[in-house]
Length: 484
Image 1 (tube, rainbow, N blue to C red):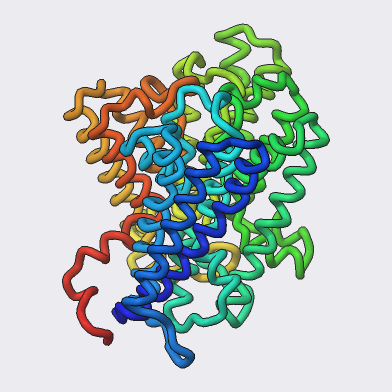
Image 2: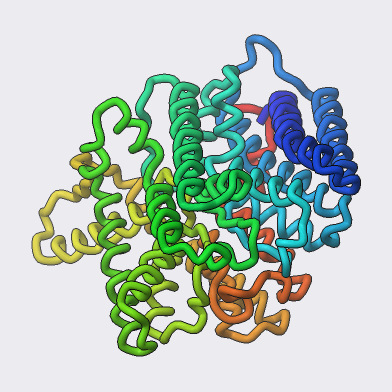
């Protein structure tokens, strides 16, 4: 790893974070929020100071070529650095203590959307906007957005793009990595604008529409009201939000291809079709269960089921009604969709539907090989043969996620949290959902967690956002040696 190049890129990233705080600073100044304006001004100056120190240590030169290990370091260390800097407005403004500020920032940038604020409606608009912005730039990935705006990337650029666009398969539509990053960014911005317009037409004011659009497309789930959708009592808004949460769970690379080749590309995508089938089946099961067990009106049951299946499967975490009161079958289905997540290459968290498809095909192939030992080992997805390393990678990641869920649950039980609550928080955090069941249910927050569990949650949110391996590689001694 070239420490000079890495430090230079990290310096640019911190400057980018400072620039991202400017809209919140101007909003605080415009609304005469003295404390908020001072907090953001201090945060921006801190970002500039960190940038200056990193540039003194390192920096980029005209002929520098970013290597693979440089890309790994920029992705992992960059996420850690921006999450730490992102907590400063909460801490400097006196809105949260140190640990809670860390949780709020990590949850924002990782797209988990978990919050420690018991009442967000008392917060100034500048802080609400910063929460939404952190969700938004964390959804697609701040490093991908950075790549779209900067040209100086070499071999390490491919790793950065792969690390940020989560999932087992990494579709590439254009020869140049920067062009791919630009295409993803344009789709991301375009969907955010369309979503905001849709929310405005459903009755939200401009500020609410923009904030909720950013956190919907990022599948982060931060809102500016405590009850989110209940605040409006608008069925049309619930359907609109469900639609955009489902759209955000699809691969953004798939949408980039659809722009050039037509919308048929979307409906031909095997992973997205399976994801829609999961949504449909899960929503129908929950709808019937709500009508049968809780005697809900059929339309309300269907609307509530579709909304919360879309919310938890996309790992957005918006709450329309208290699903923690649902019957056991409905809660079990929601927990399953939460664990599975959305599609590879989307802003959604979770295991990813592509991995589930590959694992089922892999198991089917093993069974067939028991009967026909000479059977050729070949697995296809979207008509393309999937290389064995990708298939085994899906199996390895499934194993790691299960192990991490168990470890985090044990950490919280050691900290005094009940078994069921610990399992729910663990699955919710590792899937980047936010709300779950029990102690951090639909109407609860992470504020109820002990401090040690909160710090552990930050670590696991960081690991899950970069899908574990990109972070673990930093702990290998050979990584820090001189360049290959």
